[in-house]
Structure formats: C-alpha cells, structure tokens
Length: 373
Image (cartoon, rainbow, N blue to C red; front, side, top):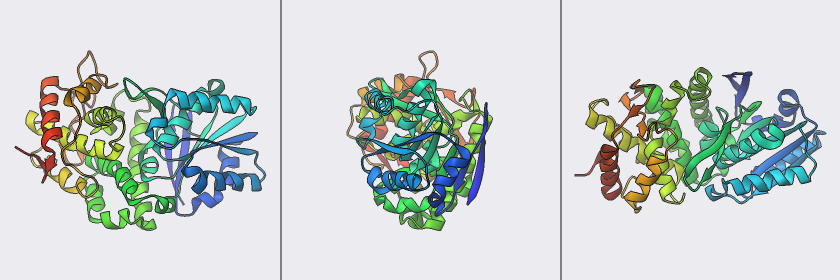
C-alpha cells in the first residue's frame, strides 16, 4: 500500500493506492472516518460490481451500512439526482453522525461528494474510486458538484474527503474504452508538470489499456502525487491549482455542447491539443508541443472531426467558470511538462482566436499532431 498525504485548510487526509487495498476497507473506514452509519453511494452499474459487495463487507465487519444508487452516466450528475439522494438519506434516518462512501467513477465521486458537502450542512465523505478517471483525478482534491444547463460543474463545493482508497486492480472491470477515457487525465498531469512521466505513459500505454495491475498502480500513484502536490499548495483554486485545468476550457465546452455524449477524456484530449495550438500561435508554447500531445493522445481517443455546432460550443465557452470579466482564460504550456505562469497560472485569450482554433479543430479534426490546413 502506498500513501500520499493531501493538505487542506482543516488538516490533511491520506490517499491510499495499492492493488488489493479494498479488502481492508472496513478497517480503514473505522480508523479514518468513524461514524454511526455509512451511506454507500454508487451508480446502478457499479453497485453490482463493487458498491453492494463493499457495503456487505462493511456490514460483515460490524458497521451499520446501507447502499443508495442512481442511474449511471453523466446525465445523472444533476441537482435532481442530488435532491433524490439527499431525500433518501433523510427518509432513511441518516444524521450528522453519518459518513458518505462514494464508490464509483468520476460522476459518483463528484455527485456523492456534493451530497456529503450539503447534507445537514456537511458530513464526512470517503472516496472509493473505481475508474482510472476517478483514481487519477476526480476523487482527489475535494471538488464536488453537478452539471447544470449552463455548463459542466457550475454548481458545487469544496469538501475534502476523510480518506481516498484507490485499488488499481478494479480497473480490470472497466471496458477498454473507459480505461482510455480516464488515462487522458494522466497524460494531462504529465503534460503540465512531468515530461518524463508523460513519456512513460506513452511507452506503457498498451499495458495500461490492458489494465496490467502493476502498470496501473504506478500510473495512479504518480498522478495522485502530482495532483496532491498542486491541491495542497492551492486547495481552493485561487492560483496554482488552475494548472490542472489544461485542456478543460475548450474540453468542457465541447463536452457540454455534445450534451455529454462526447466522453470527458475525448473532450479534454481535444482541448489539450487545441489549447496547445493556441499557445503556439501566441508564441507562448514551444513549437512541436501540439504534435507530441496529439501523437500520444491519438492512441487513446479519436481526434477526428467533431460533429457539433461551433456556435453552441462557443456559448458554453463563454460560460466557463474560469472566465474573468467575460474573457475566457486558458492554461498554456511553455513546453511539455511545464506550464507558462501567465497571469495567475492562466492566460486571458481573445475569444476570436479561441473561436478560430475551435472551429478549425472541430471541422477538420486534429491529425498527425496538427490542425489540418
């Protein structure tokens, strides 16, 4: 078992990474998040695979545990699902001496985290990520929230978990396509802060997609270390934490414009390549960076044309939560493995340039590391 500590305003919490660590979940819950009752929350796909067995394991260990589910998919990450889950907890008699245990992918970690942040003005949450995306990114850092018609993750809270338990062995239960979607965030971590890690991911991609447990553990651990370092320095995204948004300004706009039919990983991969294109056009990003990103990310997702309305995508771009004074802000690389500091670790970019790059990328796709002419 590997342990990474994440600092918060209230103290710190551990992220435990290791093959087979979930077998020890009941003891870990009792040690790190003691509660009278535990509310396990999973989507209805993950519930059968992991949520119900883990809940039953907690019961067998003498813990008072119940399971609550919601329909799988990004379409369920809404205020409606939040309302249903909180009402179910209240009807079941859960009180402030309870703990939420989020078992699932990024949708579950975000949604269940938001339930915990707001239920009776806040109860503890333990994150048990079951996908690459959730282990590498969504479960660490304390962000929780839901999507709304205006865009992705626009309603939420910062609510640090008491504990994160990541067992890379469970990614074997995911379809290969879902593994690929989640690994995009690992490549993002390498792109912003560790070029050598980016190279290892590229070289070991076959094993990672095949869910080799040791390769998966190494990747999850390094990504957790990178994210923990960033969020420990800037928990509430006042400055440095913005580096984690590389690829997300354009990526979130694409994802929302597709009504979440475009996978998060696909959207962020396109966003990274296109934001690198913006950086190169501005003279901020070293030439060839875009090509290296596309060359690696094309092994994960399709970087071809995106059949979406550009104007709808631009509408969501304008609503991005990182915008200031109505101007979009974008994280730009200096080179692979290094972010340009800009102004507060992001750059205000003229909307006309973003619109031009976005339209070209959506229409022609990204091939061989470049926006086709």
